[in-house]
Image 1: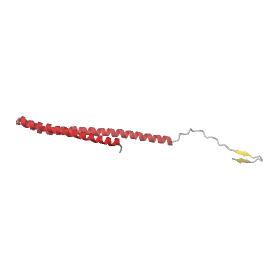
Image 2: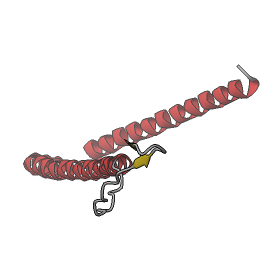
Image 3: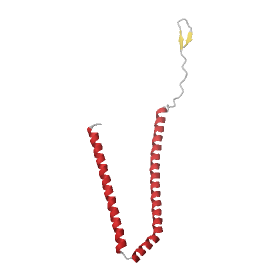
Image 4: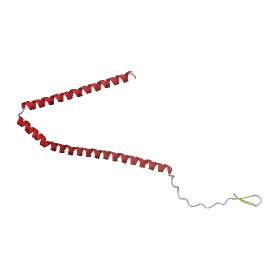
Length: 137
C-alpha cells in the first residue's frame, strides 16, 4: 500500500473511533439525566400526583398505539406510492428508449420507397449482319 492510502485508512479509523466515543458519551448523558429525573420524580413528588400520572399514561397508551399505527401506515403508504411513481417513471423511460431503438432499427433496415414509374416498352435489339441475316441480341 502507498503511504497516502495508509494515512487515509488511519484517518478513517480515527474518525470512526471519535464518532463511537461521541455516541457513547451522548448515551451516558441520556442515561444519567433520565435516572436523575426518575430519582427526583420519586423522591420529590407526592404519591397521589405520581398515581395520576401513571393512570394517565395507562389510559393514553392505547391512543398512542393507535396514533402510531395510523401515522406509520400513512407513512408506509407514502413510501409505497413514491416507489410506485419512481418505478412507473423508470419503466416509461425504458419503454420510450426501446421504442426509439425499434423505430431506428426499422428506419435503417427499411429501404426508401421507389417512385412508381410507368412501364417501359420492350426494346427489341436486332443486329443485321452484312449478308442479310438478323440476330437477336
